[in-house]
Length: 335
Image (cartoon, rainbow, N blue to C red; front, top):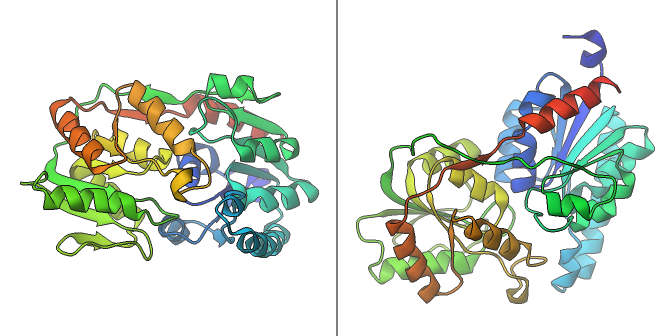
């Protein structure tokens, strides 16, 4: 390895779930650099820490105030600010690549203050407009990357790379298995209850059911439930599952699409206090328009989505960041 490269550290900053999964997709870019992950203490974060240098910061998001917890948000922000300062002083990265979101703001702010180049890759989840993190963190970034044309046009100074690709590869052999996952950050009891009610109504006869409930989430009796699952185990289950029921996070959706699963998405909704805004509905609506999944909010919706999912032919799809990786490799080489 080039000595100049080996003596410097690249910081990979992303909150839990889909944000950090997008960083993992860029491994051909950062795999040749000394690097450190900055993320949250989730199942996925702990899996990353087994193979890579990793630091954790407290979860914080502006939406916490919207959900009626402004003091909780403020205290988390104070802790995150101090944690982020210690991490940046410890590692002194020459550059930071971040995919957001709120938990990473102080990381990029301190890194910028200490002279690092900031590369902000907005979430693939933002099809129509830049995320709040992109708008707030954008002024700190030396390079802004949008992953959808419409979003890029509304984010001044950004470079656009759309990574979405459908796949012609055959669907993996599947088992009669339904896997439900609520994601890495928040529990989502409504989704779990939709699956449990469908099973109780006899709609899942012949299917094994496995549910990842989130920490402290509702665990229905008679169903195999896990609060969290290691990322490798999650990938194995997705490879085998015929049907996947998940929230509207892009990490869960893209991982299921790569494995050719029949997908029923239950987006978290702000008016139910399930998330900080309604971006998951925007994501799932955009995916549904492409024929990639079915959506549900109620038991009746779920029953209809289940029937449609079984009748339809699943579409395999993924994100291909190769063009973005090539662009960023050239950018990093010039720093």
